[in-house]
Length: 242
Image 1 (cartoon, rainbow, N blue to C red):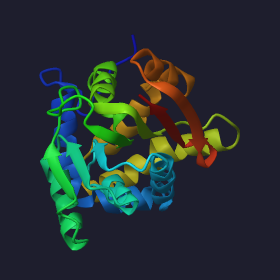
Image 2 (image 1 turned 30 degrees about the vertical axis):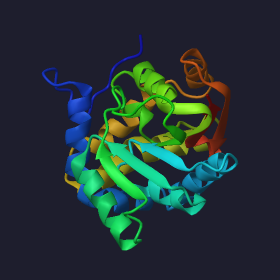
Image 3 (image 1 turned 120 degrees about the vertical axis):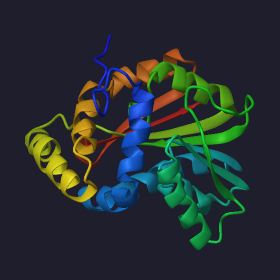
Image 4 (image 1 turned 180 degrees about the horizontal axis):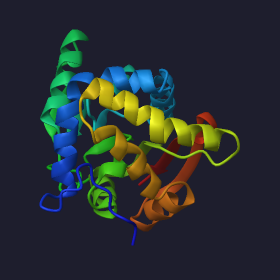
């Protein structure tokens, strides 16, 4: 069994409760740090992921673990009739709602509280589902993925981005230094949350990535599962279908 890593290592609260608190804490600075610490490359990753679902011309899209809605906003260029950004952090979604208003997209893009393991949606509702750097935070990974499979229509597509660990020299060594020392230091400086950017590398280190995650996606029922490392392996990009 994989080691369970939680943001605050609080045995009296579930991982889900701790993740919610963590993202509520860092919501005001999340977008700035996300783009700054990735040097803006995260925008390119999202574009690639949205391109991967464009082939089926999705009209109803779920962006799960939406956070501040960057992935959901990117999906708007596909001209869907509805995009739902779902998350457990109300403060993160509040930032997303402001983005939708500024883009005059509130009639298409909405946000609601969604528990990945018990979604309030009927079977086969969505044409496509996107998840950006969120499956790693699921309390029960397989349960969350099975729920994604349930609410996706037959023939629908899923695009998942997740932080990964480079495997080759010298990127592996350089990224280890950045990920375990520089990123937590900068994150604490700006976010004022001591644990949030320490939890990030800890959670990545125990997450089943690459072929291991592909095996889990296959196990819960997805088909045509594909994996591609991006930017020297610092991001993992997965696609699959129902």
